[in-house]
Length: 166
Image 1 (tube, rainbow, N blue to C red):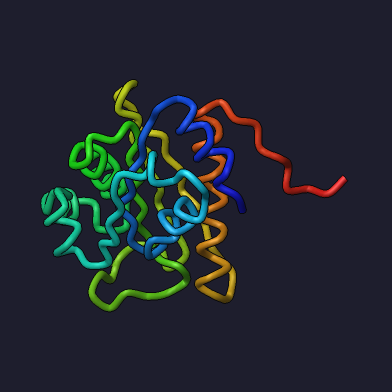
Image 2: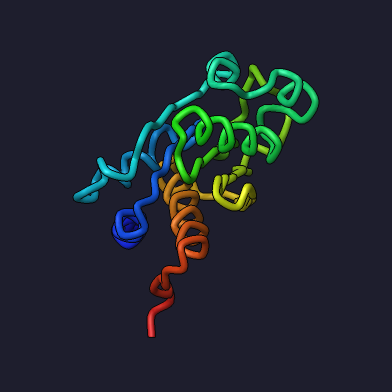
């Protein structure tokens, strides 16, 4: 997993990014900040594990109540609001469950993660719905991070290396 090409392309294009992460616990922000020059592209990152803090960061209670905290609609709210809050070119919203039941939110599949990337310039969302079945949270987070690398690479027009060996 490597965010280097993404950070380099954001720097080259003078674009910025911010994240509002739940189940990945800041994994995207961590991966980005591991790259030299990340401070010029990453404006802000919020880890919003609880519904309370998702709402404090702008996610609509009505959306959570209607669709659940584990939904693409909530991921949209997260991506849009973090982009708006920071005036970033791209906002990433991630919510879901990594093979774990949530006693406070008894809905949604226990192995599904919703990813939304808001592109401010084009006023559009790029969405992914990822199933995670690995035994550890770390491995499941890596699946989500690889999906984000793939989505951002497509958005930015970057070729990524195939994961298959030749």
